[in-house]
Length: 115
Length: 115
DNA sequence: ATTAATAGTTTCATTTTAGTAACTATGTTA
DNA sequence: TAACATAGTTACTAAAATGAAACTATTAAT
Image: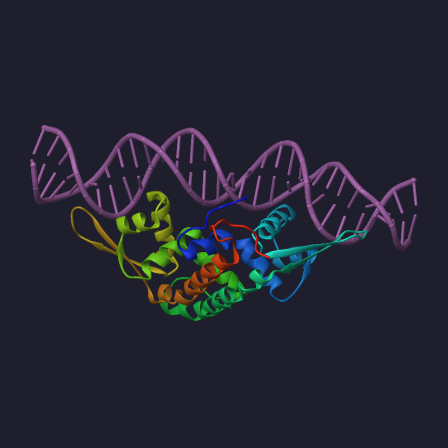
């Protein structure tokens, strides 16, 4: 699988993590290695099929590392690669903005913050 | 339209800009006010329908401002609100990461898993 | 009278994405 | 012997997003 990167770096980033689930996966892996089941639980509302598909694609693009243990029942661990970890500033920026937005919505009259 | 914001700020951000098109719209509006046609051209490959739908939704969530001029032919200008502009650090982080990623992949610009 | 320009809307078809449920594998435990 | 646990896969279905093309409105220019 070979693809030419877009000219705009923002589009490059989008190409790899525009998916909502991928970002949540990264968020949850930033705190450390997790097993498949743990990820499924911490993300919530994601189906096995979709989680598997996203993890596979992130493996292909070099964002996560998959380690299989030869055990029964199966044991698989997912860890961010160095490239994956390097997304930390992006996630942090998103976190900060989301926090800030809570305080903005009132004056802007857009959405309603949680009680 | 009322919606409860998610507990996690990252999810709040995703709720508003997880869409690939929205991020490209923001990218192009960060450099200043643009008309509908300019946006369509600078984003490239987006249909009128989808561009309109995205702009409308961003208006609703308080990210962009729509200004209609009573002229013929029609003249409509889109500008980021203050909230919209505040996404600059997120876009910058994405830009930087995209740039960095280039150095992690092959010299021919092909996308191959680093490491 | 016809054409051009801009910013749309509407309709229909297609594609993409996602969800559900059933099924696989296998050693351990009851 | 049967159920349990984990990490999947596969087939089928449903929903959502997108694309293409036609259509609208209005006035100025040709």
